[in-house]
Length: 314
Image (cartoon, rainbow, N blue to C red; front, side, top):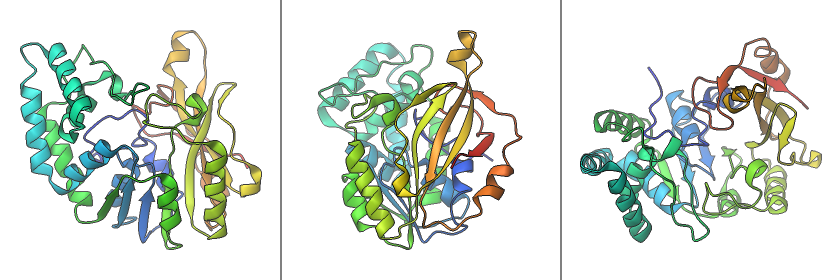
């Protein structure tokens, strides 16, 4: 039985989650996601009984409100989605643009769910005015309401009554975490966007981010960070500095379909950094994965099957 996910959100770690979770302690008092997105790691951690207490935070307020509806009011949001979805059949493209316009006027999280289910590749895009501006996928009309309801109910069963939801700057969240927490940090993908990424309402400053990690180290807070990556010989983003004393692993996502179309055999890799406060047998874990064959996935979109190899790099 698959772990439920209401939307196929681009950049979500839902397919990397099985590998990321292998680096967590067997049990965690509370899992904190300062850049939660669709909270894929929290969902997977609950599914695997690693934690039953979660702090889900994201600066995107409508997204957090949507997550809270999914978790705490599954029937309400499933019914709202079905109603919006059923209205699109006369002219689904125009219906999508009307829904997008209304969302940008109201920030209604119920409309956001429909947009996420219907937009191209589940790829959220915002313009410079922080308005949702992604186009509809013209080949499909979004997840069928019956399937959506099943996934919503599945997530709710895993997380209901176990979460706090906030829309804070990540630094405010990190300032409040405790040594008994585990923090999974998945910021806007600076390797592609720098401090501005149309997938997010805002980017982050590299130096400020490093200072925040330094503070976590000083307080001995256990954490993991998904940050940079590479495709073939091309790297994306700066590595986190060595003075943080983080243990870096490369998770082999698979062969890039984009490169394959161009006749290049290139493997996509994402980096995972582990804090020095984690006591774990890293070498044994990495050796157990190194000989498994990678799968073919789109670059950093993480669609398809789970990852196939984890390589220790430092």
